Amino acid sequence: MKKISLILILSLSIVLFVSGNSGCIIQKEANIPIVLLTDFGSEDYRISQLKGIIYSNNPAARVIDASHSVPAFDIATGAFILDIAAKEFPENVVFIGVIAPYTQPEAKYLVLSTVRNQLFVLPDNGLLTYVIKNTGIKAIYQITNQKLFDKPIKELAAERIQGKVGALIASGYRTQDVGIPLTIFATLDVQEPAVVDRRLLGTVVYIDHFGNGITNISEKTANEFGVKPGDLVYVKSPQGKITARFGTNYSDVPQGEAIVFVSNNLSMVQLSINLGNFANIYGIKAGTKIEIER
Image (tube, rainbow, N blue to C red; front, side):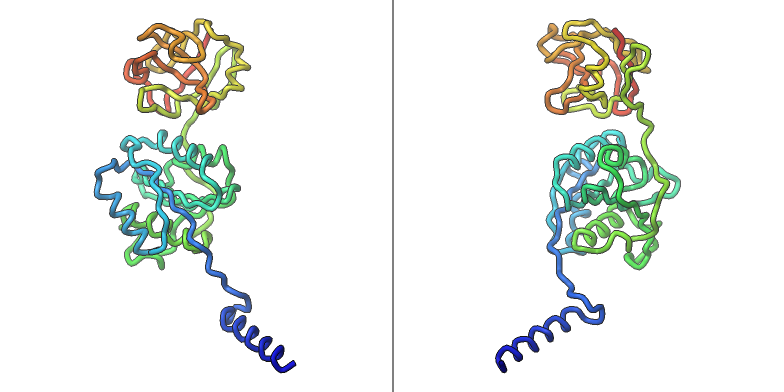
């Protein structure tokens, strides 16, 4: 009985020591991964600076590079890549997206948590558009807690604000402690995919390395439109009207001709040229609104 009593006393002492004044046991959570997405380019000093800020505030951080090659200031492309990454990564990940942060008169920075338990540290410039639409919001906070920084927030570069906050959140810092809750935030002006008056409407959301235009038109919506492989279609954009074939792959048309098909990788409608660069030839970019007619 004496041995049992001694063990109980020691166990209680350990619990009281760990719990402190709060009355509950504090458990140190393992760091969750940090995923970086920027428009810095692969050789810019800001990449190493951002990582240095992260590790200075969280030496145990685990940092993953999604991409640093988003075209400069291209928020629409960044929003698409961020959404694609979020879909493939598991829960309990912090995304830090530093793309064109100074697009508002007074730059604001957000911390977003989604229903998938992923966290995002982003400028308030529309970068969260597709993540919110496809994943859903749990909470959004504006970074206003001046106690986290040694200089006024408005005087700090984006990477210093986002890097530090992302590092802290990854180590267990509470999102609600970064600042004030937010209900109004910037989103991109995107034409939602739909079939209207025998026209297939959508928006180009991404231009890939080969110049293909990826749209937000899903395979389901394309099927509702009723177009079939081999059908002739017209793609209308602000730059003009383009004649193309609807098909299943690039080789369905001769080299140099335009083709529209559903990408087997993304299951989205894609605008392409067989062995050519659709974006360069027809002047489209991420954010271009399009219509497809028979």
